[in-house]
Length: 306
Image (cartoon, rainbow, N blue to C red):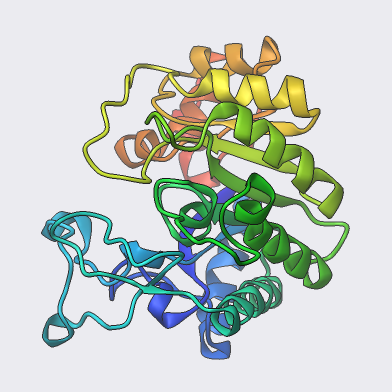
């Protein structure tokens, strides 16, 4: 599978002005070219549907990632469950009202429809890393009271459940639907792995096929014990306790490590991101090292070991 990451379902839901979007029909033709190419190489194209929430309107990471003013190609307003800025250097977001919530739900469904028209075979709803849907889940960013989207666990998960339901009405039943979550905020009083298990139990009956278990991102300055495979136990616990397929992500770098995660039942899939930036040929190397046959581009066959 080859997946486009964090593709915005609304213009104001982009992280940066340079982000990929799926909020206009005009986006479909070029994405269709990309997805056709992916399939021609023997891979499955997927798309991650996202809304950045209070993390919107920032510079690209290689330019520092700071909040952008409107004079710097940024935009206002940005939205969140509550009027709490992400950091002391971030603008204060507007609380998303009920009409705005309905608009975002529809935007995710419309994004899934456009992704399918472009040829995507998998969509993933991004509800992690401190973006809008995660902001509603986490008590660290959601201080809403006396309305259907704040306070209790059921209220804080309602927005994401509505998005999943709306996307499933648009996305073909025969094609997989994934949800990416931050399985833990790594902060006392924040979202926990037990919350993630409970959420997974809510999402499976709505038509979610797999939970992609990442973590963190709700608030800045958190000490995360990053180490090889440090998020794999999240995928394992959600898989065992919620009875749903999971994907493991984060500092998975070697073929042997990835193979062990699958073979021991810790997760059903392994997702790679930064390691593929370092080594775009990782899948071919993994197949070679693990003695598995796989399709090679014909231009590369001369390099394949017998």
